[in-house]
Length: 348
Ligand code: SAH
Image (cartoon, rainbow, N blue to C red; front, side, top):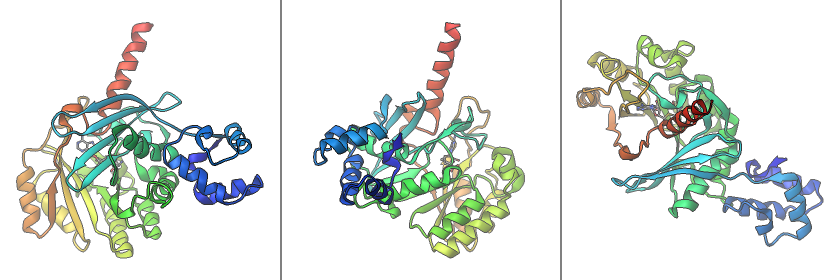
């Protein structure tokens, strides 16, 4: 069966051409799909014969709400979606003054192994499809009744480890015949797959690249982020410099502040040195506690911020949204998995 919602207009036109249908059918079907229609029979401007042909050859992806939590503090909504194969993924809708931002996942689990992150604890199960990424934006809008204006690829998974899918998703979500969300309203966050950052640079997209740096020295970074054992800080920074030179886009560096690990003045100074020459913005993230991890939130966030600011670096400290609903990465899926696991154990 064809996963039709992962198709772009070119693929769809080719399919219809093959079927002897006029090219404009592609746009009709594309528009229905991107409005959230999940049944070919609802596509009322297509002939019955074509609807039947579509039903017998194509599937339309969709997501079921497994759990939905709404923060009483700030209205953040967290969705745990169930996929048709039984896997679960998370999406978070955050309300900011400048509009609603949706944080989406790109994989079921993650294989990057960062020590502070709940998403990676069970490893990677599988990549998501472009349609499954798009569905998170679409069904969040449909379920919440809220218009989404910004997207961050900061949910579960490593976007650059599912590169082609993410590129297709960006094309789909950006389409004027679809959700039409501008690239400047999209951020892609990566743990630092340097070769893929080089590839991304060549695409000249107007999106914001966020790099999860979390430490400016190899010793610390390799301890908390296994990816650094293969890709050193210097190789990563080389890719960042190249990305900035090629695209002219400012890079955002994410830095989760961990007590006694990456929060010293010397590390602030080294961080400033490493990002010199790049139009950069440093986003300090108060560490979210993950039950399985011994790492503790830093008590030096303000000092670290000041130290960077003294060196002329733009720094913000991330505001925590949805703190009453476990809105941070991977935690809800993790809890659902644990529950499933203990359920299974109880059965046997
Ligand atoms: N794989 C991508 C995107 C997903 S994680 C990446 O690594 O960037 C989104 C962001 O949340 C990353 O910056 C990640 O390092 C950070 N993060 C993960 N767990 C965290 C925690 N417990 N506290 C604070 N930030 C965390």
